[in-house]
Length: 337
Image (cartoon, rainbow, N blue to C red):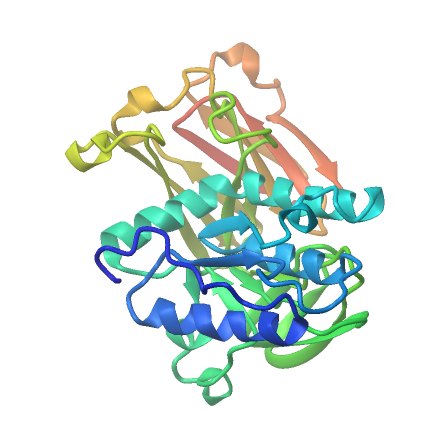
């Protein structure tokens, strides 16, 4: 299966919360067995109990963070996003859109799986082997190194316990900061999957699309959670062929360095087949901070007219400072005072 299992899944399982809960541990065991790509029948295959859509939504939230993302079951009509009414359809849409937005990050994880054998769905023990509290933790997982996913697997709950390993973790939805190692109980209404971002993460996002390859990714948003020195290398290929085996891919290194009075982010010139990157590609840095910069300066290959006289095109948005960069390579300097 490690070598030839192109799209393994957990089989024709029952559509129950009990069955759903076992899927996380199953996926993590497969990941540690050298099988990086795996998924489940979202919602469960056999309808053996009534479901008003709650199970389907919770399973969809989990499925959005599986390599194989497939909504499928024996009673197929119950596995359509609109099969449980418009309110639940809107929640399902939210997580399908989140998966598509995360595609630059997720596709890079797939490249890491191919190149290094790293699973995409990672048990916490893989990254934190010295923490005995994660040695047998099968209720949550890391998506790559930077996202911690804790699916809700019980019916009717509105809050959910999560264990956070060492370091600082940001609630993806509320931006609340938690200092690990610690256990926390977070709000988990039906429309909210417990999801956390590691301090130091750089996560590339794409615009929402209706299907993969709908149009070229001309804008990439970089969610930056500054902490010390951090790096993420974005991988891109044509998404269709096997030409990547012959070197037809591009890698772009993104770094962030925190200093006492500010920070510096760098978007390096891409290496490899640069023809794969749209010529009109722009980047929007979404830098997590509660502070308002005194100055933002961008040095890039963009024409001078694209850079404001006193710095860069930037603005505040909730808990983030947003900086638009017209081209790469680019160096973005944010000064607090």
